[in-house]
Length: 283
Image (cartoon, rainbow, N blue to C red; front, side):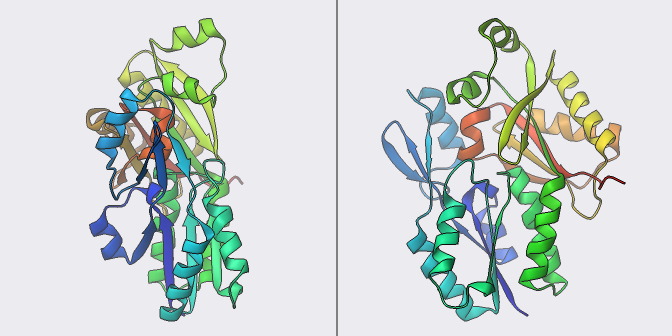
């Protein structure tokens, strides 16, 4: 059975990669100080972070409307037997809900498989890469969807953030005033699990933060079928340091790479880097 795949722009693929991998990415709407942009269309990651540093309020992510999905699903079902649609966590926007609404309005909804990744950016990319691999092996849309639903329960994302200021402004991270001021002088590490952000560690310096992340990966193990993905928010040196640490500590090479875009970037801010991987299943 032939399968077409639809994702959203938060996954971080370049236009060239989208074409090579036969992926369709729908752009999210990002509002910054009252002005609306389309992610990846008239707003690049670099431009976003420049605007974020000057923004008076936290950027707002707008969902893709159901009508857009109705048209896109109909078009792709004319080209293939099934559609697999993988979108970022519903905790960040209503995009996944709008896609479900669109599917319910179409004839043959069983041919459309919608997955809420429970993650965003580098986390979503791990699942999408596995979906691409399975499609190449001839899996059906239903088989791909079932596999991703299982994998996302083991999906891990850890990011060394440049500053907790953006998380503080968003209200996504709770901490007492004194604790927060103390953490601002450290290199905090946050996790993203099923759309929930949480502070996991505070390290003095980049090297210590990278080492802590690598140790977590060693403890949980990683599924070798699903290569980890490194993400960077305008922090190439930190990403390179983390990649080297992962190789030396955990023996991991061949990671995928993505640029952390507006949706996750609005919370972690510039100067952040992290990794997403699928942990080994528990015995």
